[in-house]
Image 1 (cartoon, one colour):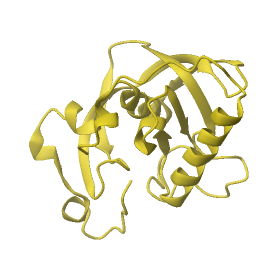
Image 2 (spheres, one colour):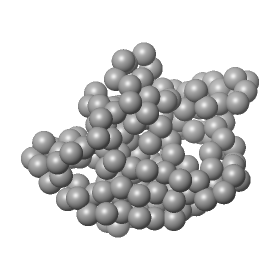
Image 3 (spheres, helix red, strand yellow):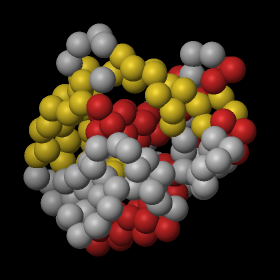
Image 4 (tube, one colour):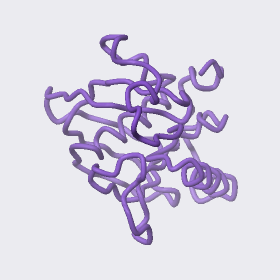
Length: 174
């Protein structure tokens, strides 16, 4: 928190399948895996472009260790995303973030979502999702608009240190 890049609206990606874009995606993947994250956005590593990755590759044998009870989310590279809520139903749940280490908060998110965008090769992505998948996409896309999850918390009593809210769990930085 406090990094200026995290508070900016990220620029659209205009060219796909370039060496620079593929290198950025590899950096995002390496960082996400190293931190056991559920997703990551380019601004989190200092690059103000509308690129996020999230989910787990098919070769991953287990669910994300930070969210062991969550449904698996397919590994996705999503560029220039557009999100549209399916309806007004929202759900409160715990979130954390690589950019807000050691903290957790209860964040309201839409439960069902339609999103579109492109993969790293410029192929169109068009999905209807719900549950944890919808939450992860919304969280990561917020980074592209300069929004960190604490800005979405309804009540600050629901925001604090992971070790206080979850004393018996080994929850590392998101």
